[in-house]
Image 1 (cartoon, rainbow, N blue to C red):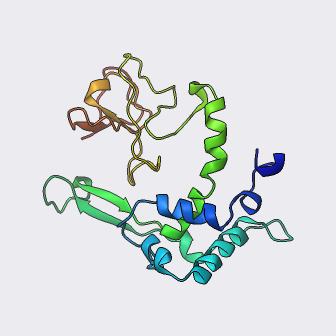
Image 2: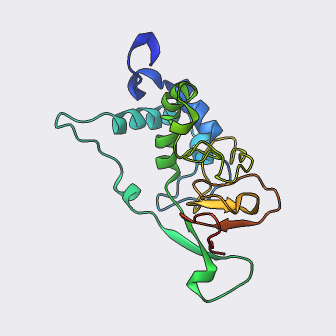
Image 3: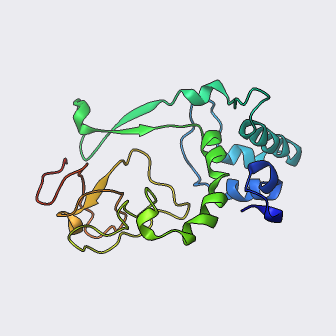
Length: 200
């Protein structure tokens, strides 16, 4: 529920103050994408320019008369970089893929977080689904392992992470990112069942 008892919407519930608050919450020092725009650049802009960015975010969120939403075409292209894991290698399977989505697109998505944050406490843990540090089955594996801690202050799952389980829950079905940092050993497990093998 948004302000004034109305259904939540970006137009009604995201003023310039909320926009700049979410901008400040974004992780700093991140690589830029094809638009070469970073959160730090927006923060350094004059207030009237930041206000224009805020208005653009509202316009992107609102459908046109035909019910269609429009966004910058560059958002449809996400470059992916392959970086070495533990040691240098020419093999693709030994690389880690890092997607460089536009920071403006990430901010556009983050502006909707308050709508979800208001609902999540009212849902049973089994219905939380894919959230940072919480498995789709309620945050605990079949082996009864301890619940993982949140992946970060922003609640965003690290780029490139799909489904991982740490050694502490190695017998459980992997359904979420484990951010426990226990022994540093994290293995990609996909939909591995108890006793199965995960990737390295």
